[in-house]
Structures are given as structure tokens and as C-alpha cells.
Image 1: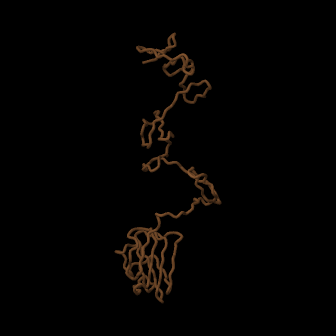
Image 2: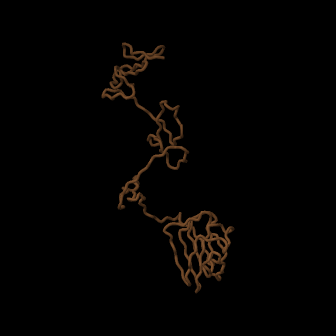
Image 3: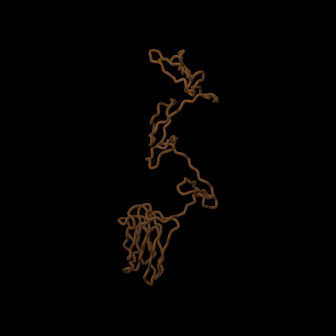
Length: 265
């Protein structure tokens, strides 16, 4: 169905339809709109143009709207490759772009991501702006992010404690984990040896299984060791203590000769 030009009374008409009246006192609205093959004109000015055409001060514009889609879905509102499609906006009216997803959205395999960058600051300084504002992340000359460690009430290490560690292995963690530090005490007048195993208790036999770490505990000594980097155990974490240093030693410490606490994740 094709539109016709306006009649002598300034009315746009269409075959077999009622006239469309455009008020004459609306100076911003053209007196006539013509839709013909390949062209849309408002008065004498086209409001449709071809790709790569320069703009003009006299151009008429058409308002464009977006579809609100709070959570973007792969393929939503899209047609076939090469077709025209619609813009989509989030609940704030911002246009979705490739790689942008709302907070706490599940990952979709193959979805594009935005490459991020950080600002190089060789000497860290207060530059985060006002509380509640977005801020940049800063990196050192080596590319490492500057950060300030802040204590929290959750997320710390788990503690394993034994006040009578001996030649019978004890299981610190039954699955893979990291050791971040330990405390030891040797209450006797002779040396003892603390041994860690990368295995579950069911798979450790002291004197047969080879420990991955052997630590000398001096006579009547105690100490707290915090590791600068955690030590990884790929299977599990077990610990035992003996009177001799050899991996095959099964010498039994006396009751409560050795104490140990292990800090792990």
C-alpha cells in the first residue's frame, strides 16, 4: 500500500483511507510526508539517506529507540548475519556492547570479553578519588597490581592443632591444599623431626612413605613460621614427628614431646 502526496488542503492521503491531518501551526512538522520507492521525504527534504552520505544542517532526523533487556542473552533480538538489527539497553538506559554483562551473571562459553588495562604508577600514592566513585587500578613498573592487605573477619586460614604429634601420622587436610605457616614446640632435651607428607592418612606409613618436608626441631625450643608463599600439596596434607631425621626412621617421641599447629587452606 503506497502513500500519496498531500492534497491542496495540506493533508497527506493514502489510497482507500482517511486523510492524515498535520496541524499547520506546528512549524517543526513538515506540511507533507511522502513515502515512495527508495525515498522518504518531509516536505522537500529527505529523512532517509544512503550509507556514507555527509550530514547537512537542514537534515530531518528520526528518533531511534532501543529495546530494554536487563540481562543480555546470546542471540536475543538478532536476525541472520548481515541483516539489520536493533539496539538493546540495560535498566539504566545504557546500550549493551560486546563483552559487557551485569554483575553476578553466569559465564557463557564463547562470549566476548573486554580487554582491561591498568595505570602504571611506579610509586604508589593515594589516587582513588572520592568514596563511591569508580577508580583505576594501578600497577608497578613490573606489571604487578598495587594492593593493600586488609584484615577481615572471614577468609583466613584453617588451623590444625596437635599437642602430641608423634610417629603416627595425623591428617591435616584430606584433599589438596596449601600450607601458609606453622607453629612448633619441642619440650624435650633432644632433637625431634617434623615431617610433612603429600598424601592422605590412609596412604601414609611413617618410615615407608617419603615425606616432602622434613624440619629439624631443636631441643627445648618453639617457634612460629609464617611462609612468604604457600607450599602446595597436590593430594592431601599429613604430618608426623620422629626422633631421627632419616625418611625411614620410626623413632617414637614421648607423650606430648612435640606440639604442632598448621595454618592451611
